[in-house]
Amino acid sequence: MKEKRTFIYNLEYYVGKFKLPLLLICAVVLIALPFLGTSQYIMNLVIKIGVYAMFGLGLNLLVGYVGLISLGHAGFVAIGAYTCSLLLLKAGMNFWLALLLSAVVAALFGILLGLPTLRLSGSYLSIVTLGFGEIVKTILKNWKGVTGGTLGVKPIPKPTLFGTSMTLANNGLYFIMLFLLLLVTLFCIVVVKSKTGRAFLAIKTDETAAVMMGINVTYYKVLAFVLSGVICAVAGGYYATTMGYIDPNSFTFDTSTTILSIVILGGMGTTRGIFLGSLILIVFPELSRALMDYRFVVYGVILVLMMRFRPQGILGWKSQVPYKLSKRVKKEVEG
Figure 1 (cartoon, rainbow, N blue to C red):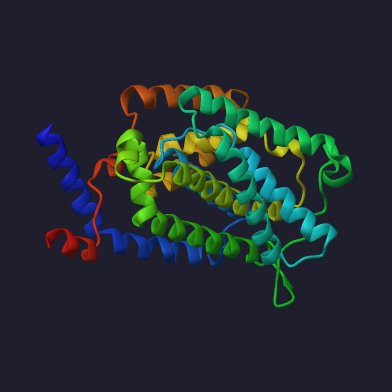
Figure 2 (figure 1 turned 180 degrees about the vertical axis):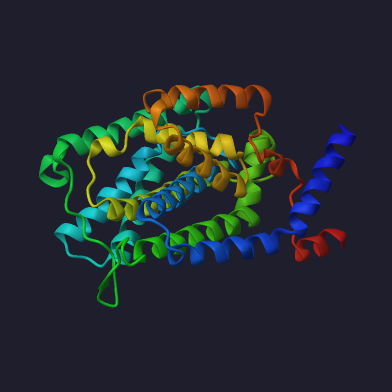
């Protein structure tokens, strides 16, 4: 055990040592990508990777840091997508305001879902969240006067900035994706490094001990549902504008499964792992189109193998590294 921990600590040291150069290289590549003659197919693929990374970051707050499994996060994605799309199409609202209001609506649904599930865990919680996703999908199908039913919502206007429509052709949609992804990533890092993040980890590690330490478990569990739902809704709202058309079948159980697979494969309780999981699970189907009919069979095999041989995920060792205290907290602890 001691040797294993030493290896993990050394790996963390070397990764941390080269973290800034790697981040700078990634930033330069991502910013320069549209200007390198990249085809629209590749740009579409990169945007999709970024969108699913945002979905994964949202679910990771709930699964990776609080330990609550959700199989219905496609419901939050649908809420964000439909709210944003309807506000753009029927109310003529500005994209950024519509995105903000979709986050508010998702937060309300996060509270409604979080409160009844406080006493649930494991498979029971998974079933309830699965039901939530199916209920949202059913409402979207049958509320024809608002959602259009099975016909969906179209054409969804593109975002505008200073009177210019942001499209794939002028790379506007791509840079909006980068901006939102950066915003969501920084938000998740701030949450995890804050008092809220420490409370999340305490609940995940031992809920009874967390209660005895004075942590308001009810508040933080509901907060986790709210934050997770808001992030997925924001990404869903942006996703709808890139597609130009959505219907209830755009947000099925398969979507929830893919998002959960990204979190598990990349590494629960990590941020970098989510990017890796999204990259693998979005690019893989494109590289193996002949296996499209068996995509979820392959996903299932991957998840079974991961849970058997590496349950913490590819970069899951990050979640085993001791929590880093800030300089201020260290001074208070040391007296």
